[in-house]
Every structure is written in structure tokens, then in C-alpha cells.
Image 1 (tube, rainbow, N blue to C red):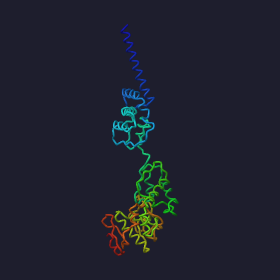
Image 2: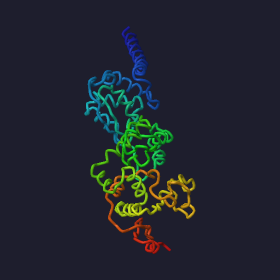
Image 3: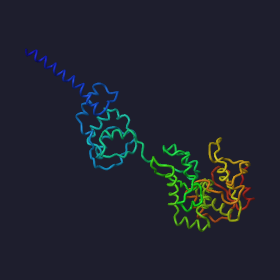
Image 4: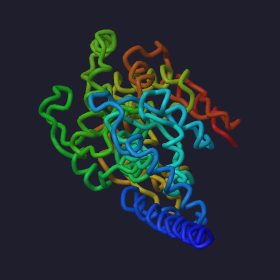
Length: 367
């Protein structure tokens, strides 16, 4: 009889163990979702039991009234390190429980490096899923000095912004009554200030364009405006000249010299004869895959457009690029020189020879 009771007891224990091995994973699946497919049977049971043991450590937020904070994850950082730092930062209750959930769910293999905004209002499970997507709600967008607005538009897709090139150009090719310096203008060309911008990923084309123009306005210091007035020029005229200087000056230190040449030409009614204005007029060159055809041929200089300053005197109708602060300062405070001509040096350095007469200018040509 005792032997029978012992056998029945062992059978009962085995049945209970069998039922436990079935119910524990099933209950864990119900609460925490499907386990990672690559876990072995024993691992599934082991981590299912651990998750059920942890219970509220994973499903309840640490602090329902807590504030959001920045949490960086470095490239190659281990799961253990991330879990420990989350606990130390007061974002989760228990690093071990968090690690167990990551391994159970398979999320331990797909944590992305990046900078996250996390809150203790989230449960540990929610935070585990947040760490799977490092996509920021903000984007750092860069405009380089000398870009025309089509080049800015073409760069938009690489930043993942929802604004298309056509939408951006349509927003930039409109009137801006809120800005006195754009009165009467039908384009923001020249006033899309080159800079690094942090913008919301969900920004609209209109907000983006206005942000660039507003940044230009913020850089119009009293000292800069005073320089414009000393030259007897409006803001729009200065930006137009600076947009040419920006395209001509390979080296910033020559900007004030180049600006002096163009201002000297304007003062005596001489044509500007500026290559960048022809390049702007000609538009996109599909063979060179650029908006700035280089070199220009003799025939190119005959391209009929009011932007072609080889054919038409005075300033082009609008700026031809978006100049940076260096070019704007160069026009506001140019060098005082007798120069009316400049030509690139023949050594490929990007520097120029400057001359007072056309004869001297011809002598600076490269053979």
C-alpha cells in the first residue's frame, strides 16, 4: 500500500509539473506576448516563470507623475548596461526584470543607439519598445552658404522631412508681407539664411521657409544695417550683391576684396560681368548634374536673361544664391580698393588676382 501511495504521489507531482510547464508559458504569453522564436523550450519556460515572478515590476510605471528626460544609448552598448542605467535614472524599477523581458521578447537584439526621450510614466515594457526606434521627433537641417533654393529643396529627402521639393519651392516662391526687406519680392531667394536648424520632423513647407527668413532677420544687427546704409544700399540690394560674392569667393578672406570690385563697378555704371549670374540664369545642367555650370563657354555668356550681367547693366532681378554672414559683412564693410577686375589665379588655389585696368586684367590670364 505504501508503495502504491508513493507511486501515486510521484505521478501527481509529475502531472502538476507537466501542467505547470504548460500553463506558465501560456500565462506569460497572455500577459507579455509571444516569446522570441529562437528561445529553446527550457529557456521559454525559464523566462516565462521569471516574468510571472516579476509581475508588476514590468507592467506598472515607476512614477505616474514623473517627468520626461533624455536617455542616450551608445552604439554597441550591452543590454545589461542599458538596463542598469535605466534603473539608476529612475525610469524602471528593476534592471534584472527589464533584462529578462528583453530576452524573453527578443527585443534585446534590436535596441537602437540614439537619444531617447523617456518617462517613468511608461511601464518597463513600454520603455523596452521605445528603445526599438531611435527616430527623433526633431531633425537637424543644414543650409550651406551659396546654395540656391532649388539646392535646399533637393536636400530635403535626405533628412526624412515630410516636405517635398515642390512644396518647399512653392512656399519659397511667394510674397512675404511680414518682412519689410522682402516688400514687393515674389521669392525668398537670398533670404533662406545658411545655418544649422533643429526643426520638428512634422514641419510644413511654409513654417520651414518662414523659419529660415526669420533667422535672416535675427542676423540683421544694427552694425550690419549701419554698413548697408553707408554703402547707400537697401537690404535687398546688399543681399543680391552678397549672393554673387558668396559664389565667387572660394576663400572667405577674399570676400571683402571681391565685394569692393562689384561695388566699384556699380558706382561708375559698369556692368558687373559676374559669371555666377549667368550660371543662375542657365539653371540646372543635366550633363554636369549641377545648378552651377562650370566652366562657362563664350556662348554661355550670351545666354539671354535679365540675370545675365554680361548683357544687362545693374543688379540681377533677385539674389542668385543664399549668402552667409561673411558675404553680407563683406558688402557692408568692403575693402577700399581701386580694383575693377579680378581673375582666378592659374595655380588652382582658388585665390584671385585683382587689377585696376582691363590691360592688367588681361595680363593675369592663364595661357
